[in-house]
Image 1 (cartoon, helix red, strand yellow):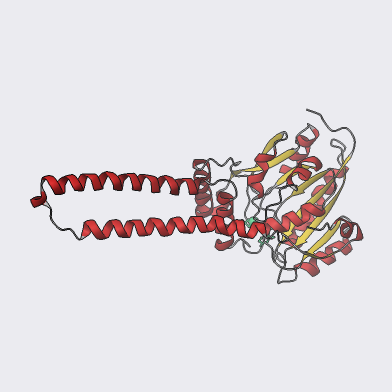
Image 2 (image 1 turned 90 degrees about the vertical axis):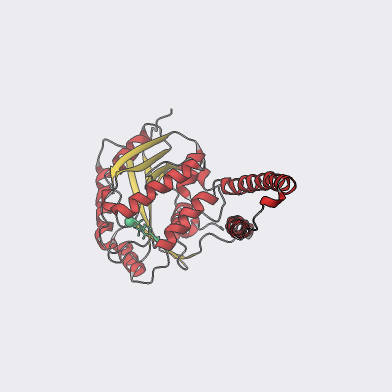
Length: 330
Ligand code: UDP
Ligand code: MG
């Protein structure tokens, strides 16, 4: 492993969607934290920039970001033209960042910022990726942590490698980020892509805290969408399960037909005309078929969306010329 030698800079990317309640509390904490880290001579972090990405908020988040920019030289703002979702907002920030290390975290600071110390030292020891891992999710409530665990089990049953309890709180080296940005998929599931990158990885455990202020911006719908993307972006196993189910039913039907033919010729007098035995298999098969078509449709729809190559985010404006120069054609 190569350890880093010279001084280095960090870009901290924070997606913000309707965070006017949380940001006034969390931005100063983030700024103080990184200023202290820069002043601390035991690491070689020399400067940082806080890139706040406004993901089409409908509240006063953008004017708040502009005020933060005016008051703090380290803060920059990026405004997307509408709400593109957490993953795309983060991607917008990552695309525009160009420091030696790039960190991402949520605006509500639910993920313990102190863990960044571990990430920084992992980077100085040669890691290209330092991933925050929640080792205590009690603040998430039973529903959220229970469904997360069930989801991780489903993913691993489908053969998807994922780092459990790692959300989007991480440090990436410039090299790792460049690799990540080569993935061009429209339906992003960043935390699933990370393990496919390679590079030396360090896990940094921390306890997840309750939200600082405001409500969760992840509606049930957004969460289900993300969960489904996590599966369909990484495996075609559901399609194989459908095919296997079809094959089993097909074989079973052939065997049953042979058996019924035999019964018909050998003991024709024993046959009782059955209603249930006709209707139930029909309903069952109808159900299986509809479900299968739905799963197929999910994949076909995804192909359709991917082939259009639509931009994954649209930047309307930024607060600095330096950032404007980095707005690459998506
Ligand atoms: N977020 C975003 N766009 C969205 C939804 C959420 O940029 O459409 C941001 C939000 O501002 C926060 C982060 O994503 O910084 C995580 O959202 P939240 O804390 O609401 O999710 P939870 O922690 O409840 O899963
Ligand atoms: Mg949160």
